[in-house]
Image 1 (spheres, rainbow, N blue to C red):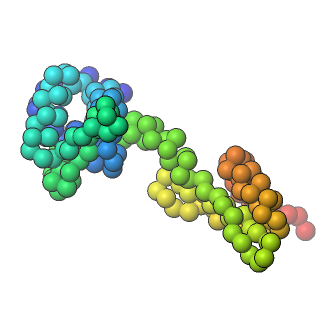
Image 2 (image 1 turned 120 degrees about the vertical axis):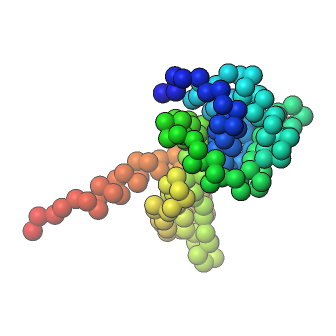
Image 3 (image 1 turned 180 degrees about the vertical axis):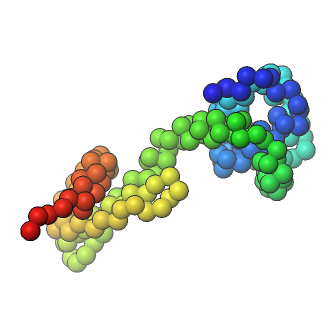
Length: 182
């Protein structure tokens, strides 16, 4: 939910920008920066732009062009070093919506990196499908090795896992939680 009172404190606006960039942990396009900050905080666009330019001039934020026309922004080491100071000065009711928006923005990217599979040779003309699943913190949730025999079968199993990882994981959990009656 958007904080209703307009934020016009230039220092707080700079803290919010630094906080946002420190949380994304990589360079982001200008449009994403605008969406993350202005959609979650009641900040005047001109005040935002002045704060961003000041952070660039003081070398807390790096600005560069990628691909000939895509303006991107990233926090510098100097900006990260100020992290403890600026984080504690941003109220939680401003940080939480930004965190939520960042999580949503990178949801698909995290999902792509969460599911990993490949094939491993065992012996001559024998292969295994290796399937892994990770959570948002890159903690491994599942590591499954399946003997497949041929390379083609291992590749098929690997593709199937990538396409149906959620169902496979759910069924594995369900099978371990089933109780058997004696």
